[in-house]
Length: 332
Image (cartoon, rainbow, N blue to C red; front, side, top):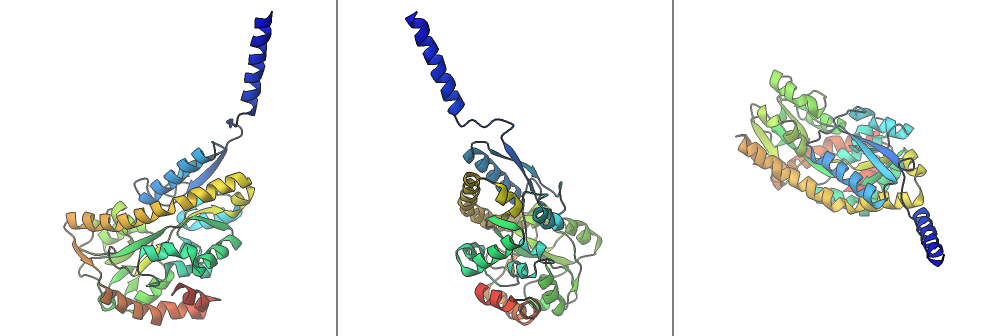
């Protein structure tokens, strides 16, 4: 009899232990959707995947993720609207893509505003970064992991090293303020997504263009170009492309989940910096191996672009955007 009582007591204790354990059932887990424009081979997709894996683990499975690369769920330019409405949870999102509705965000794709990825990543702890974060949150999205990418200049016919070189070129400029600056320097501008550059170069619609180092490689643009100005040392093109979350999604999370989401995001920033700098080195090697004439921009060349940027893009931003001059001053 005593043995039966003892066994029953053990079973009760085990049942109670199981009922109190923090096991998350399938019905309790919440799936968040991450949409972005980059291919599965792109380092930005891999960073998003790493983020999702880490959050799932740290949340004990209460948060899970489904990734939609290559614009499979939302086109690149409408991802902001989808997040603002709560139709999309997260994205790896170039902030300047939302500048049509949030003009202040053009500061995150301003010609020559910074001269390295490291400087851009330092924004998080500076007033300019705090201001950008506040602007984003007020308009519906929260920066989770800061990520900056450098861009190169690819061309056919002649190398593009200094502003005078763009005169007469048919160019993809990547951003309204770059379009304005390069047009003032004598280039003919055609707007398009990075994914469309290959065909445009192949058919003669473009003779040159700007995009991120990672996109130059992932879209195999070395197959259509003759010259490449690598961003490995200096670049005129830097873009903030952070992992962001819809404020509607953020507000719906528990305090514990918010803590996990934020802590993992911050933890990944050193990895993001590593990935961004590695992309520059990789682009240099890939283009060199492909037989493309590669040039590393010098500080003197960068300074000439900076002078042009101040006279054109910076002035336009200060004149046209409410609070633009203040943001420029903070960024400088």
